[in-house]
Image (cartoon, rainbow, N blue to C red; front, side, top):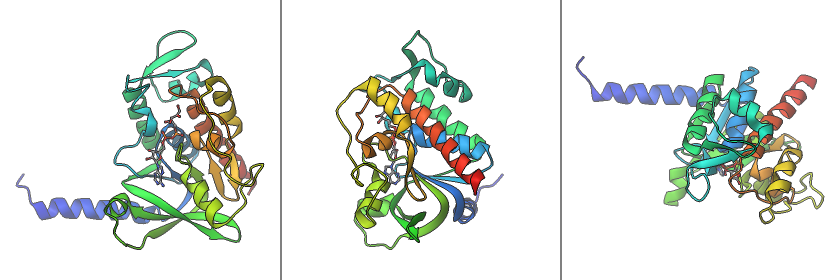
Length: 257
Ligand code: 48F
């Protein structure tokens, strides 16, 4: 076959624009492609909800790639093993089960994609859309526009539910707190992440996975940051369980409507 560069260009642009247009109105928009966001994406898409995930970087995986201090290993406790099995991630050991961080990211991403979630990389969520005191969509720009410091207006997309899965910086909840006000926390504000305490943090991250403002849910490390719980370091069971929990909450809520 004789190759034509303009046909390569046309194939890429047409396909990418089609995917973007197909996802302008979705059931669930997930901000952040770390472990909690990817797990949520799979379990929601599997139930036939339309799911779009937006990741600022080129690669999904967030803080999982680096394992513990760049040893490419993560620890998972037994409560999360059914999720590891759902994604076919291998592990070994006893009590403190160990998995390869690179395999873990690759399989979480593959699981989300195979379930039908659409992943958009290189896009930063810089604001939300609001109607009648509820979050109803996202405001997007290319991450490269932000890195270059260019003044370019963003575009927007609509979602019935938005999930903040942005990890430690808890970016979407911060925007909503700054622009709109009260979150569903004791102080009405982001309580702030506390220093490392793995046992407490891993238990609390599932409890803290909630609807924090109408239409806006929080999962993963962002959930602990919002509700003032500690960090946990490179144990990832809580991230997986929190991602599954947020999917369950949205599915329950969606059935009631
Ligand atoms: O940080 P991250 O992995 O979040 P997580 O799923 O998992 C936390 C763990 O990795 C680890 C931990 C547990 O042991 O403490 O830190 O809670 O992934 C968050 C992703 O969100 C992206 C960011 O690039 C990362 O890949 N992200 C953050 N802000 C935005 C964003 C934004 N405004 N728009 C798009 N993506």
